[in-house]
Amino acid sequence: MSHPIMFDDADPLLHRVREIALAFPDAAEKVSHGRPAFFTTKVFGYYGGSIKVDGEYRRHDQSLMVLTDPDERSALLETPGTYLPAYLGPSGWIGVDLTADTDWTEISELLDASYRLTAGKRRVARLDEITR
Image (cartoon, rainbow, N blue to C red; front, side, top):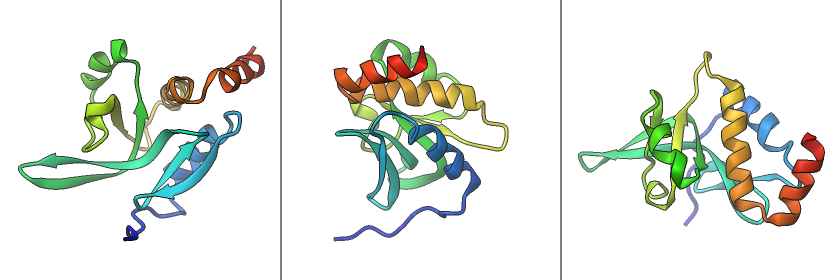
């Protein structure tokens, strides 16, 4: 069963996320479950997410979901604008709402950390070479 597309390709926040995510070594984009997903062999970021409240799903269309280090996850979830996404939250993922006032340095750092958790040693070594 195919999922409906749940994003606007012209969304400027998505455009900014794409610029950051696709700059990582071997990063690519695909549509997964109706949303943009950024990956190498494993996904390291999704644009958009949802939470379940009182049995209903509430969409966070302009947000970024990333895999986080378990030691940092609790502190990140206490930050305003973050949420525990449905389905992926129990596996260590968090969601961050994006707005015109988003701190893009923080978003870059979150994507970097998620990439490092999923990309494998060779890609991380290449990233380290690039960022020196």
